[in-house]
Structure formats: structure tokens, C-alpha cells
Length: 255
Image (cartoon, helix red, strand yellow):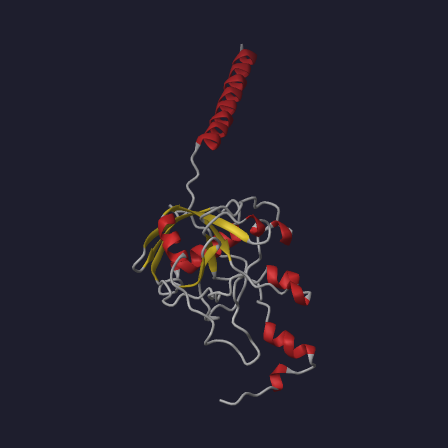
């Protein structure tokens, strides 16, 4: 009799364990994952809403969220606008003393398969590959970001894609097509004004009046994405001096 009771208890326990495991498996498969949503107000242009993808680029998303929460982008501008390519915004003030790792295939990161379609958010970075400093360029992103105006496959695998516009592509289109400056007042002594095949001057990618980000907020739906891994940024100017054997610590500049 006691043996039967023990077996019954064992069977009930096994059924309970299987039911628990089955419920958790079902829950994990059916629960909706809510990604962070960014709302960006561009003064005089409208609202752009973007969904971020932490499963594709966790470090980049964590960095972007932290900068938004710190108010870093409020008052910043879209200072590069290229129709049929992208619009770019961010710091330009060198206020950040770190960079982050590029999360894309060329940099040895294989988990990010997000392609640069129209409206995809990418992390801007420098390109030092002509100097043989490919890795330094790959890991030079920090705050500047861009939004593709159209599909741009040549960026795939070479820049970190980490989100996408879900509302406001009409605003992106308006920003991409703002009036830009011409280069004729910016040329050096030996430079020529660039022209197209018809002899018309090719404008720069700098707007005459840069669209201003009046505010940027993010809803993480209660999830803490933490701090990104911060890297020591590559100092291009120091590297140049070192090529000439100059100790930058002994260099003085006239005020």
C-alpha cells in the first residue's frame, strides 16, 4: 500500500514538473517582445518614431538609449542631408570620451543581419581604412547616427544597423531634401568647384539651415538595457603626430 502511495506521489510530481516546463515553453514562444520605441521631434518638420532592435545590436542600442535618457540629442541638428542616401545627426562637439564596438559582419560580429532598407537607423563612424587602420574606423562610433532615405545595400555589413523608422518617413523625406549650401565659399587655393557632367555646380551635403532635434525620448517598457561597453576612442591627431616622431605632450599651440 505504501509503495503504491509513493508511486502515485512520484507520478503526480512528474506530471506537475512536465506541466510547469510545458507552460514556460509555451509562454516563451507566445509572449510578445516589446522593443524600445524612440520618439524624435524635429523642429518645424514633425515627429519621427523609431523601433530599436537590441537583439541585433545590443551594445549600440544600450548606448543610444543612454544618450537619449541623458538628453544628449536635444538641440542637436541634422548636419548632413543627402537625397537618395541618408540624413545624419549627432554630436560633432567631441563631448564624448569613448567609442563603442561596431556590431556588423565586417567587424567580426555575425548576429546582426538587419539590412539598410529605407528608414533604417545606423551608427555613423569614421573610415581610416586608407591608412591601414580599418579596425580603428570600425570601432569609432559613439553618438552620431543616420537614417537611410532609400535602400542602400552597400552599407550592409559595414555599418551597425540598429533600428527602423515606424512612423514619419515623410519627415525623413523632407529633411533629406532641404536646401543645402554650395561650396564656392569654402574652397582652398588649389581647389576647384565640383561640377556634374553638365557643368552644374554640385552642392555640398550641409543644409543652409540645419533641422533641429527639439527633443528625443525613449520608451523601454520597463526594461533596463544597461550601459554599453565603452572603448578608448582612436585619437587621429595623436596618430598623425606619431608618424612624424613628434611627442604630442611637448606640442604647444598659440591661443
